[in-house]
Image (tube, rainbow, N blue to C red):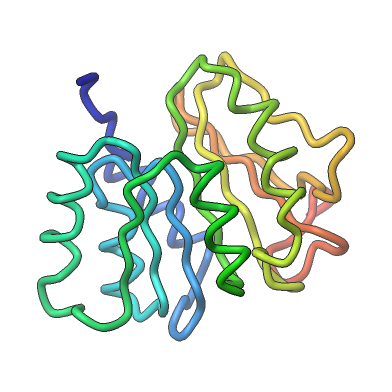
Length: 175
Protein backbone atom coordinates (compact mmCIF):
# COMPACT_ATOMS: atom_id res chain seq x y z
CA UNK A 1 0.00 0.00 0.00
CA UNK A 2 1.39 3.36 -1.04
CA UNK A 3 1.71 5.87 1.80
CA UNK A 4 -0.94 8.55 2.00
CA UNK A 5 0.33 12.06 1.38
CA UNK A 6 -1.58 14.11 3.95
CA UNK A 7 -2.48 17.70 3.22
CA UNK A 8 0.08 19.80 5.09
CA UNK A 9 -0.94 22.02 7.99
CA UNK A 10 -0.19 25.16 5.96
CA UNK A 11 -2.36 24.01 3.05
CA UNK A 12 -5.11 22.79 5.40
CA UNK A 13 -5.23 26.20 7.08
CA UNK A 14 -5.22 27.94 3.69
CA UNK A 15 -8.05 25.70 2.46
CA UNK A 16 -10.33 26.62 5.34
CA UNK A 17 -9.35 30.28 5.11
CA UNK A 18 -10.47 30.22 1.47
CA UNK A 19 -13.73 28.47 2.38
CA UNK A 20 -14.63 30.64 5.37
CA UNK A 21 -17.47 29.36 7.57
CA UNK A 22 -18.62 25.86 6.60
CA UNK A 23 -21.33 25.24 9.22
CA UNK A 24 -24.25 23.20 7.91
CA UNK A 25 -22.67 22.87 4.47
CA UNK A 26 -22.27 19.48 2.82
CA UNK A 27 -18.59 18.58 2.43
CA UNK A 28 -17.24 15.84 0.15
CA UNK A 29 -13.62 14.77 0.67
CA UNK A 30 -12.40 12.73 -2.31
CA UNK A 31 -9.19 10.69 -2.03
CA UNK A 32 -9.50 11.18 1.72
CA UNK A 33 -6.21 9.44 2.62
CA UNK A 34 -5.80 10.07 6.35
CA UNK A 35 -9.18 11.79 6.79
CA UNK A 36 -7.53 14.94 8.09
CA UNK A 37 -9.46 17.32 5.82
CA UNK A 38 -12.80 15.61 6.52
CA UNK A 39 -12.10 15.78 10.27
CA UNK A 40 -11.37 19.51 10.06
CA UNK A 41 -14.61 20.05 8.13
CA UNK A 42 -16.55 18.15 10.83
CA UNK A 43 -14.83 20.13 13.57
CA UNK A 44 -15.89 23.34 11.83
CA UNK A 45 -19.53 22.27 11.65
CA UNK A 46 -19.87 21.01 8.07
CA UNK A 47 -22.74 18.57 7.69
CA UNK A 48 -22.90 16.05 6.24
CA UNK A 49 -19.26 15.19 5.66
CA UNK A 50 -18.52 12.31 3.30
CA UNK A 51 -15.01 10.91 2.96
CA UNK A 52 -14.15 8.68 -0.01
CA UNK A 53 -11.08 6.43 0.11
CA UNK A 54 -10.35 3.26 -1.83
CA UNK A 55 -7.84 1.61 0.56
CA UNK A 56 -9.79 -0.49 3.09
CA UNK A 57 -7.26 -0.14 5.92
CA UNK A 58 -7.39 3.64 5.55
CA UNK A 59 -11.19 3.59 5.48
CA UNK A 60 -11.29 1.85 8.85
CA UNK A 61 -8.86 4.39 10.29
CA UNK A 62 -10.78 7.33 8.80
CA UNK A 63 -14.05 5.98 10.20
CA UNK A 64 -12.54 5.73 13.70
CA UNK A 65 -10.86 9.13 13.36
CA UNK A 66 -14.08 10.85 12.25
CA UNK A 67 -16.30 9.14 14.82
CA UNK A 68 -14.76 10.87 17.83
CA UNK A 69 -17.55 13.28 18.77
CA UNK A 70 -19.14 13.16 15.30
CA UNK A 71 -21.11 9.94 15.10
CA UNK A 72 -24.15 11.23 13.19
CA UNK A 73 -23.18 13.57 10.36
CA UNK A 74 -20.36 11.67 8.66
CA UNK A 75 -20.05 8.85 6.18
CA UNK A 76 -16.98 7.00 4.93
CA UNK A 77 -17.25 5.33 1.53
CA UNK A 78 -14.61 2.70 0.85
CA UNK A 79 -14.65 2.59 -2.94
CA UNK A 80 -13.09 4.25 -5.95
CA UNK A 81 -14.31 7.75 -6.64
CA UNK A 82 -16.13 6.87 -9.87
CA UNK A 83 -18.28 4.37 -8.01
CA UNK A 84 -18.67 6.73 -5.03
CA UNK A 85 -19.83 9.65 -7.20
CA UNK A 86 -22.35 7.38 -8.95
CA UNK A 87 -23.64 6.14 -5.56
CA UNK A 88 -23.85 9.65 -4.06
CA UNK A 89 -25.69 10.93 -7.14
CA UNK A 90 -28.14 8.03 -7.02
CA UNK A 91 -28.81 8.72 -3.32
CA UNK A 92 -29.49 12.41 -4.05
CA UNK A 93 -26.55 13.94 -2.19
CA UNK A 94 -25.59 17.54 -2.92
CA UNK A 95 -22.50 19.26 -1.54
CA UNK A 96 -21.56 22.89 -1.10
CA UNK A 97 -17.89 21.95 -0.94
CA UNK A 98 -16.02 19.23 -2.82
CA UNK A 99 -12.36 18.84 -1.93
CA UNK A 100 -10.14 16.44 -3.88
CA UNK A 101 -6.52 15.57 -3.21
CA UNK A 102 -5.84 12.86 -5.79
CA UNK A 103 -2.49 11.10 -6.13
CA UNK A 104 -0.07 13.45 -7.82
CA UNK A 105 1.04 12.84 -11.41
CA UNK A 106 -1.67 10.28 -12.24
CA UNK A 107 -3.70 12.34 -14.75
CA UNK A 108 -6.41 13.39 -12.33
CA UNK A 109 -6.00 17.07 -13.26
CA UNK A 110 -7.59 16.27 -16.59
CA UNK A 111 -9.96 13.47 -15.55
CA UNK A 112 -11.38 14.81 -12.29
CA UNK A 113 -13.08 18.00 -13.57
CA UNK A 114 -14.68 16.00 -16.39
CA UNK A 115 -15.87 13.33 -13.95
CA UNK A 116 -17.23 15.85 -11.44
CA UNK A 117 -19.05 17.84 -14.12
CA UNK A 118 -20.78 14.66 -15.31
CA UNK A 119 -22.50 14.50 -11.89
CA UNK A 120 -23.70 18.10 -11.95
CA UNK A 121 -26.31 17.69 -9.21
CA UNK A 122 -23.66 16.63 -6.67
CA UNK A 123 -22.38 20.21 -6.52
CA UNK A 124 -24.87 22.70 -5.07
CA UNK A 125 -25.61 25.65 -7.40
CA UNK A 126 -23.45 27.94 -5.27
CA UNK A 127 -20.94 25.18 -4.50
CA UNK A 128 -17.18 25.11 -4.86
CA UNK A 129 -14.66 22.45 -5.87
CA UNK A 130 -11.08 22.67 -4.65
CA UNK A 131 -8.53 20.36 -6.21
CA UNK A 132 -5.13 19.98 -4.60
CA UNK A 133 -2.31 19.04 -6.97
CA UNK A 134 1.40 19.45 -7.55
CA UNK A 135 2.78 22.54 -9.29
CA UNK A 136 3.92 20.19 -12.08
CA UNK A 137 0.31 19.36 -12.98
CA UNK A 138 -2.60 21.34 -14.39
CA UNK A 139 -6.32 21.13 -13.79
CA UNK A 140 -8.16 21.18 -17.11
CA UNK A 141 -11.76 22.43 -17.25
CA UNK A 142 -12.28 22.28 -21.02
CA UNK A 143 -15.40 20.34 -22.05
CA UNK A 144 -16.89 20.66 -18.55
CA UNK A 145 -19.47 22.91 -16.92
CA UNK A 146 -16.79 24.10 -14.48
CA UNK A 147 -14.78 27.29 -14.42
CA UNK A 148 -11.50 27.89 -12.62
CA UNK A 149 -11.89 31.06 -10.57
CA UNK A 150 -8.65 31.10 -8.59
CA UNK A 151 -5.41 29.27 -7.96
CA UNK A 152 -3.29 29.41 -4.81
CA UNK A 153 0.28 28.10 -4.60
CA UNK A 154 2.02 26.87 -1.45
CA UNK A 155 5.48 25.62 -2.40
CA UNK A 156 4.95 22.64 -4.73
CA UNK A 157 1.28 22.34 -3.72
CA UNK A 158 -1.46 24.12 -5.65
CA UNK A 159 -5.14 24.59 -4.82
CA UNK A 160 -7.34 25.19 -7.88
CA UNK A 161 -10.76 26.63 -7.12
CA UNK A 162 -13.59 25.69 -9.48
CA UNK A 163 -17.26 26.60 -9.60
CA UNK A 164 -20.10 25.92 -11.99
CA UNK A 165 -22.14 28.65 -13.68
CA UNK A 166 -20.89 31.64 -11.66
CA UNK A 167 -18.01 32.51 -9.28
CA UNK A 168 -20.32 32.99 -6.28
CA UNK A 169 -18.91 34.14 -2.98
CA UNK A 170 -15.45 32.62 -3.51
CA UNK A 171 -14.20 35.28 -5.90
CA UNK A 172 -12.86 35.25 -9.40
CA UNK A 173 -9.58 35.56 -11.26
CA UNK A 174 -10.02 39.32 -11.58
CA UNK A 175 -10.05 39.89 -7.83
